[in-house]
Image (tube, rainbow, N blue to C red; front, side):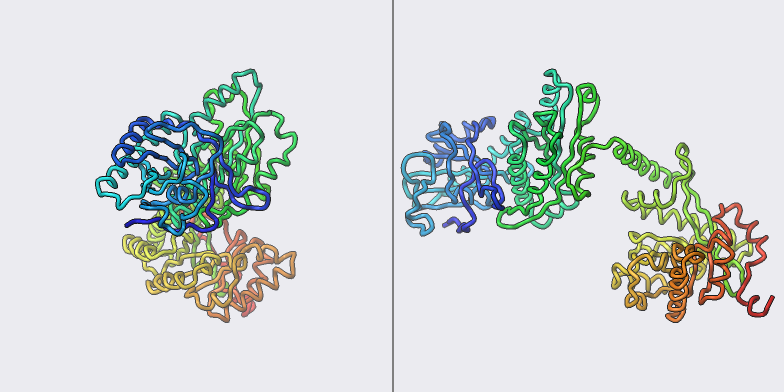
Length: 613
């Protein structure tokens, strides 16, 4: 026999929405639901009533709203009605429930709350979860009778299950026809646009639109992965309830996205006093108690002022979403739409698409090469490949900008592959021409994986370049973040014969314990310290100390940012092995490298200084 499971003390009667018990927030409130106009729902109710021989049928949504039918007819609503915990438990469970006789159940015996809306207690109770066609759980179809039963037959269970399936399909149809979200029962995006147009055509010069983002998409998806859709649905209902409580009177809330609500503010002077926005954000930052599990969200509230002319052909939701997204990253938690910020984000999006095209076509991207000289001999022994992007209309785009875009857009795998292909191919040409130089390539943290080893080997074999002529540069933070996994991949690269450089050392973690375990071959002191050597004794002391330490740990020390002869002379007297910077040479296009190498007479060297040359 199937019986109900127990419910905890935190389960209680609820109405249209459940809210989080927090300070002065009510623990729950009830609302009188409107008629549940699901297409064909009355026919389904009559079918269940006759098939199971029960006088009372109820559809209880997991929001707490309940719709009652007696003898196949809908009962009129008589104000807020408390729901028995058994009904709420059934509505929020994915399992069917059967109570053959409530008088024999210790948890139900003697309760003063009837299970149904009709007179007298109901002794028989059964429920079946109701899910939409997409599997979204929305509640339960419950049947009740005043007489106990010996059992619930298989055919009766099947009838109840089929009826619940029909209702689930009807709910989806209702949401399309009635323009309501099936989870929160709020009007959705199309209703929002219709009402906004009506509002602006009623002689109102402009309107303020507000959008509330519950959480960043990645974080919300993490909720779903960890807790499931039932928990996420309950979270959205609970957030909607708290937002509704904080909104100005006569404000209609809409669900305009999976994790976003919106509203048209009733008064265009609402921003004369913004304290209510601070209160809204503060309330949304309080923990939510969903199905007994507390959760803190990361809300963002955006506002947009719009008039009727801007609505025609425009997309106010996109604009206000831009503000709510920015607000999620700000301490205040709410923000007004900023047109300049929006244009910058749109330009970055377009740049990402153009960068992807540039990677495929290879016409706009290029590599420049900056020489590195050996301080003992003064001779150029290596070149660092540096990416350049010459946009057809925007001109040269700074590498820090487009590399960051590539990382955010997931293009780094393609970008690193392009750099390796182009750089190693060019190195093969130079080495074939007799130039005994090595090549250093920058690699992003997102590319430091198992497949990097195979990709590097494949490119080197394709262009017949020895892997000992290549060096991969990783930033200090990349190498220190995931030491165990990182060391494994770096060891595999070293086993191939390629060198490994720790780039920008001094700006990241500077974790000496992890540093001594890294299979790196060289350490590049960040140029911010080197450039400051001429004016800051502290920077000079840092460079000197780091160089000495790195040399003693077995690293080859490379100094970046050598831009003056004085700085060059200073590092020449330190425990440094190589130097790189504008004083030696600026990054050169590939076509200029052979001429520079042929004409390079060498820099002042430690060996020459030692012998007084």
